[in-house]
Length: 245
Length: 85
Image 1 (cartoon, rainbow over the protein chains, first blue to last red):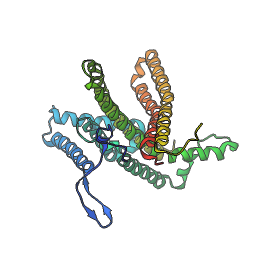
Image 2: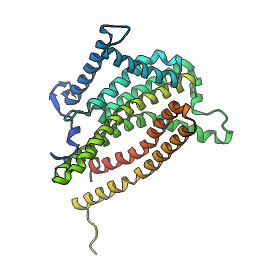
Image 3: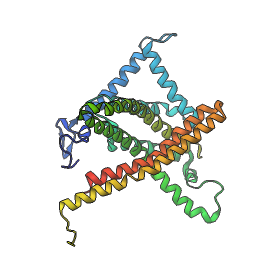
Image 4: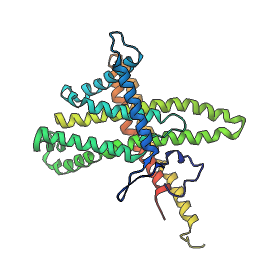
C-alpha cells in the first residue's frame, strides 16, 4: 500500500511484512507474516484431521465428529452440484474448502492476519481451479468442450453474440471467484476496525460496542459462508466441465 | 473564478469524491440481495419441504448479486489507495 496508510489506518492489519528476509536470485522469497499464518492454518487443519482419525470409534469423540461433519458437508456439496463422477476430485475440493474456511475463521482472531483478504492468494487458488477445470474439460470431451460456449437452441443470428458473451463470462470466472472472497474479507475487517475506532468516544461508545459484538458474530458467519460459496462455485464449474451444461 | 490546478489537494478532493460516488454501486447489490431473500422466504413459506435446496440457491444468488456491490468497494479502494496522480 502507498504512503497514504499511516499508523492508525484501518488498513494496517492487512500489511505484509517480512519476518525472515530471504533472497533467491533476483526474487524476494522472504518468510512473511502471510506465510506464517498460512502455515498456522495448515497446521490447524492437519491437527484437526489427524486427531479425527487417530482413535476411530463407532461412537465418535469430538475430534472425529467434527472432521466427519466437515467431510460429509463437503462431499454433500460435491455430489449434489457436480454429480457422483466428480467424487474423484473430492480431495482437491475438500482441501480448498478447509484452507479457505480456516483462513477466514482464524483471521477473525484479534491481531491475527487474514490470508484470504489478499487478492493474490485468492487469485492463485482461483486460477488453479480455472486452469484445472478447463484442462479436465478438454481431456474429457476434447474439442467438444467448446460447445460450452454455445447454449443449445440458440437461434443462428444470435450465435456470434452468444459465443462472445459466454467466452467473457467464462474468462471472468477466476476474477469473480477471487475478488468475491478477498473483497468480502477486506470489507468485513475494515468495517470492524472502523467501528472499533468509534468505541473510544466515551459513554456513548456502548452503542458502537454493541454493534461491534453483533457484527463480529455476523462476520464469523460470513467467513464460513464465503468458504461454502467458494467451494460451491468450484463444484459448479467442475460440473460444467464434466457434464457440459 | 480561478482555473482548477493540479495540486495535491485537488487530486485528493477528486479521489474522495470518486470513492464516495463509487459506493453508490452498492445500492444495486442491496436491492438485489433483498429481492433474492424475499423470494426465497416466499417460496419456503409456500413449499417448506424444499427448504434445503431453496436455501442453497438463495445463498448462491446472494453471492452472485453481492459480487457486484463488492466490485464498487474494490473500485473505491483502488481510487483511494492505488491510483497515483
